Length: 416
Image (cartoon, one colour):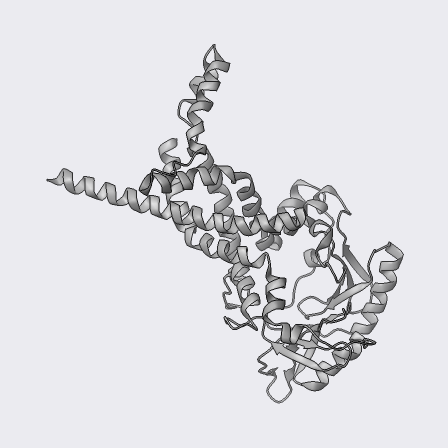
């Protein structure tokens, strides 16, 4: 059993190590993506103008008027003094060719007072420029920024979700390998409590690092003890990585089998084929008006703060949050209403802490993964965890390489 687990841990660990190094490094950074992004791009995200702010729908019209090749897909509704409003755009179809226009940006920043466009960028670009750096890092973290092919852009999410699932399973194997041998003898012995104490004392070295040992012993201790001390957090990070990346494909269906869930339109509607869009009959302004009235009726705390329609699904996603703290309230500050783009009916809601126990568990996945469930200390912890994951992966590779070299040297020596 133990020999098989050693082989499983060795080869699964080696298979996922490089992926975890990338995910750990990018995760340590994305804990602070909003702050870093605003610092890098203050020239287009911050504004000096003060005064009455213009209507967001009017600002959206200005964005489209500035470039007839694009149409709005997201509108910032909660405008903040000193901050540019952000709008997502997508290319319109060129009637001459029947294909989308070629556009080198998908985000537009607008002064909410003057209506002046302060800047544009492509958040999907593979670029280390200051404009695209933070979106690029986040895309790498979530999906390795793998391009779309064979009719879907989900390949990167599937890959990283699969890696997370392997990591989750391998974490249990690694935990078992830290145990001292002869656990069954301990359980069967008539002086069980004394034997258990002896077993725990033999397990104690697994939790310690011999800092002065150097070389192989230090690497081995850092890998084993480091993994033990953060093992519970690793399980949370690995599981939520799996659940977020494979939400529609595996996580939500599995949850629905074992517990009562409340499906929304993302779970019940089939998206349009990749590269195509459904044209809405309802406009942004009408959808916002319906959502505002429905939110008032349901007792939502905040007014509409953003609205999205990308055409992949035929409904508007209207979000409600405090613009000064979008993911506040332990990472559970974001609510959504889904408005049918055909007839304006309300298709469902995402409301933190509401619904069945399974619904709340689903809602908790992102706050747990980001650490925002614990506020600022949680974000700091997850940033440090990203570096620890890198350390565990690197030390694991070093331990494997040292043992591989030792086995090779022993074979060569035995041959003589």
